[in-house]
Length: 439
Image (tube, rainbow, N blue to C red):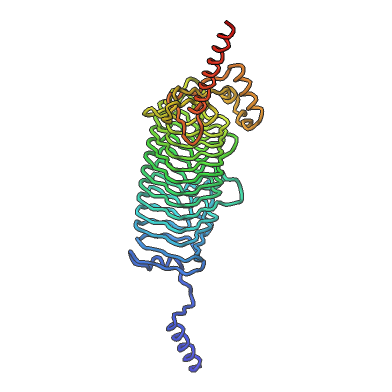
């Protein structure tokens, strides 16, 4: 018996000396044992959540490090500042829509944190910021749940009363909304790619935020800016956002917005303005949209200049009354493409006469929303042509300084005019010769 006891004691000592223990340490325990400002490096395996981080630490995983939640609550809750999460896959949060709390893969409750190189799957929200300021969310991939409707899921990145955060180079697909702003100000979103969501960007009661170099594609709505002021949208792409009443960009009850150098391609409507005032819409390109810009009379004081309209079914529709916006700035208007002949005799890039853009489609759209479903129909072209012949097209906008690019011919350029003048002069000389002979 004594020999057996000695053998057991010696074996236990040897295993302990080699760092082998019989009870596995939990991830929460490892986190709690990490000193402030310390670094916890995780192995390439699956760790069980949920976890709470309450002190400033750095957690770094590898390509195969997974933190799997319990299927209820938040997988990772950060209740401290100066926390860094890096190189992790996070999965299996709570998904109860009726809960009073918005569950997420990662929920930030404090500021000054960094979330980087994270992949999120099978979670309600991806990264949720609740009254959390000065955080950086970078290179995060959020993939929505494939079962059920999009409307029943959470959002990719959600900001609630959160200011001065940076959202950089993130990818979101298949969630309810890609990025959601709610009462959040002075944030910057740059280089994000959002697709196959309800709204790529859903944005309410938030002011002075900036969006650069983002791509919103294949969504029901590219971006919806509502009840907000001072937003900057620059160098973004709004492409292939299609649906019953879809748009690349919705501006509703939002003022003093700068919309510059964006690309709108094959959306049902490029930009839709409603009850929005005093925005700058400059140097954007509208290519092959059904409607380039739809603007209701409740929106006034916008300044449109340097925009290029190419092969849209309707470049601009003004609805609900007379247009109250300005279609030039500093004697520079917009490029209306080859559909409107523009005379530029002095070749200074600005048309010699104002352009009136006309359309009869506004009547169809005003009277029946179902008209959007038929804008691609060949019958629409026939309808427009018939109204042109009957002189029933209405002036949508007047541009006193239409832009004529040198890389495409104007409606009647100098060479054509010279030929016409030469031909007229020849005819005049010939007529005079014939007249003299007759005398």
